[in-house]
Length: 216
Image (cartoon, rainbow, N blue to C red; front, side, top):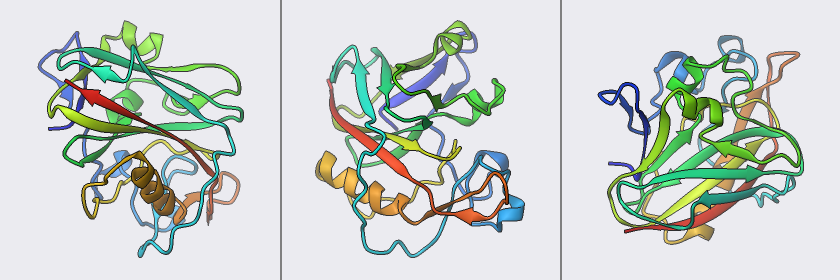
């Protein structure tokens, strides 16, 4: 069970349990398909094998804050504040205390209930809050769930429009935030994103910030 649930208060029977984005999931999933099969700018397509890690500088100066703080209680509500020096498209990835990795923002349901295109667009110098005021008005909240322990939240900012990542399985439990960041940095360096003009898969620029947090 992942650390954070995105729940919808108006429909308590339906919760996004940090849905695993499995290949074959249609529009909700990135997959290694030809560029002509991908909506331009929406998904990232990954290439195996992941090659040697390449250092990824935080060129957009992404900064992630966990609100109200980096110690949270089971059943408590949390939100996230992200700022950046450059525009880009935000993805939040959670690694729970048992080493399981999940994309918690944006999710397929959030995309389905919005116009989708700019739901995760961060503007320079403007704090981007997750969940957004509009999402809160629709009843969405992040609620802390088991397992308790030390977890990691990673903010990934894509220069090109990317909204869902087909995250790889972790080869092992990552020891700390530096190792988690190094792993995701190496993995994203191999991603190719459709170019808006040509539809061809091209390299992308990514920026990262990482925060550890504790669940009690």
